[in-house]
Image (tube, rainbow, N blue to C red; front, top):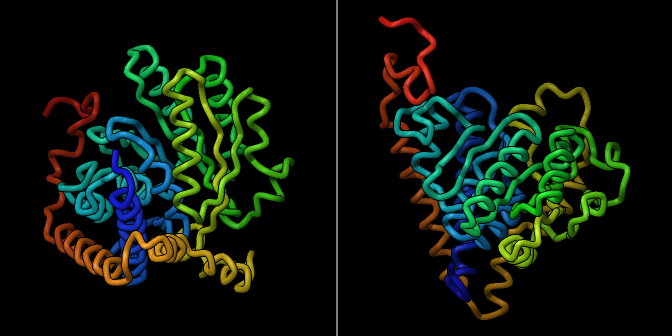
Length: 329
């Protein structure tokens, strides 16, 4: 695992990769090059990057519908991710999964899901497997404030605590489930407060500060590896954009104010981390700009790779399934 400047610059690069990737996705949706649902991670980059840089390559993650940030944070290939969004055969799921279903088992990405809280039981299953195999791998499961009210979420946390499984439940509290404030649907002050019901630590962390998320995850990971069981982390963060691209065109009235969005943008995770790097004399402005330029080129390359890649062949429609649902032909 990287340390010192290598770690801090890796965090900066991955946050910038996510930001540039999703800004490109926005443009593609607006130009109709990318058709279908797209949920961007812009504004929340510090959560996934802080958590994933606290993990080993062989540790696992599961994610949700806002699914580009999690794989990129774990070291995923932006070329394969972009190809998957465009339905190409070179994509992570060979063009069959799309925006909400990226997976790469080679680096512990067990997959994302568009169904709220559905990835939490998967994470618990993976954690049970780790415990049974005694391989000390841990699992981080990302979910949102809306998913925190789903039954699957509570069942997963309860079972993980009963069996003391090496799993970290990381709630990305971005304030809204589509357009509903979490304060209208959560009875307690903090989602992390619910941890007491499952006899696990509940930690509230600044989700705009990549180092704060990293440090909280490091502690939770160590607890999990030592056999102490799960932890519930709540990262307070904010999505700058709507729940999904194009949602604002169908809303009858706004659900949040421009002033609220502007307030959160003052604590942009990339700007905060960049300022910290300079203040601590870890990196210069020139080094930061060099990373930004490199990231810009990487995403341009990923987009060109995706555009030039072939679509899957029709006869490969059912390849990689457990069985072919059509009769022999």
